[in-house]
Image (cartoon, rainbow over all chains, first blue to last red; front, side, top):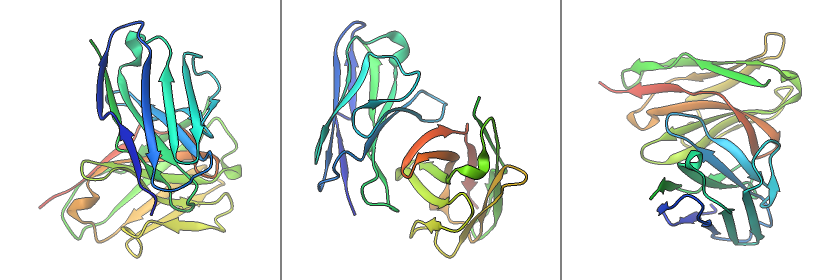
Length: 108
Length: 118
């Protein structure tokens, strides 16, 4: 099975900061990588699919990059409403698909 | 607007059964593969099952194979998950999620809590 390792597991940053989260796959997953945002008490929300494609309606301060085994998720200018846990998810190994363990983002 | 609303969760004893439902609206339900994804304290997010648009293809995670059954009623826009022989490790929030393309979950319900405890 593919393992997805997210880092860091938690992060504290100031409003306006550039925030970066990484996701490392245990084997090549091409660009079959999604990023989700989960606010407290809510369901996950798709932000980025296929590593770098912004889901419709998602603010442009969110972006994703990478391919193969190393992926990056970036918030260009952190806003208060971005407080959430962020998950990566691979789907190269269908029907299996594996989520990362999550990165909890807080405002400093 | 796409809406997915789960129901049927609750507290059940080990070995018991529950049937979850997911009511879909705002899109052509019969055109999409649908999933059940659970979030547990132990394993985080985990897709437990999916069913293709016409029910031709069905998948179960090894952890639930033989105990859970997924089904759908396209005439009623409903997705189901029959859960039997429940275990403590099945405790968590169960979400139904729509597949934008296989493996990309673009819409999620609010979730329903399943608690398996003596």
